[in-house]
Image (cartoon, rainbow, N blue to C red; front, side):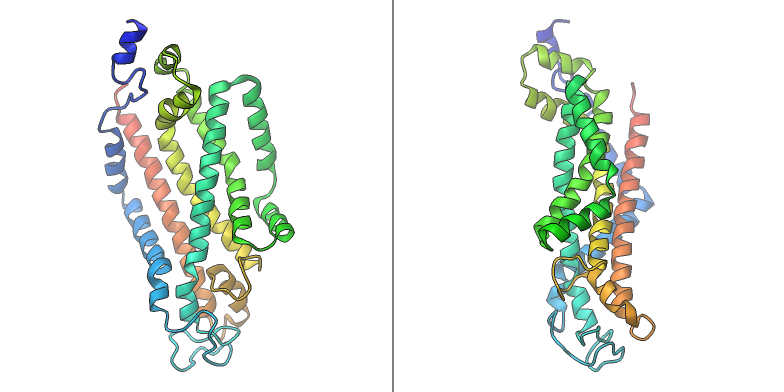
Length: 300
């Protein structure tokens, strides 16, 4: 077969070597798993609370409605917090921050890590060693300690938290992407694309990336889980986005002294963050199982 014939044959030079129903098969298999359905339900409920919850908040996030730490304060559903603010209102208002920061930081980390991994796998040699050793150095730093140093140095700003959380995600995404891409760069359709004069960016983005999308999607879900946990840890330690701003993680830290007398200010955000993390983890697990099952069933 000539190079021109290979370029005209669907699936060789284009890199689309999977059957047309491959992606749909992964989606169907993923949704067919009970763990995925439970995870999606949990995520949908928590995202719904974070997105539309503020519309139903009876009070403002910083409005004083009664004495501090009063479990049965009048006209409140779950009592008041340490400053006499309505716990239920702050809970409904506090989900957007952690969810938005986690999603944005995950997307940034995923994009940068994927580019690093693809470039390393495709070029090999010295550039591969430099990129991966750099990722190893970043990976060696404890994530929480690195985040605390950055927030302390640059200030408690949203963009600082987003960038540092994204930075901690890059090495892991790069490793996964490189590992998945190493087998792809040796395939015949990559050589055919090179022989046809395709640009390097075209080969990376149109030929290699679609063939590592499965592992990358699973890793994206896992990175989102860790982003939620890291941002929550920063908020719990008092390094969130702002003082006395409605935020689930900060609510835990602020109200834990009254856990025995006015527990809901602590328990509500704990349950929310825990269920959100579990839900995302279940979706990631279901997606990974589905991709593995489809790959095993695919004819070689």
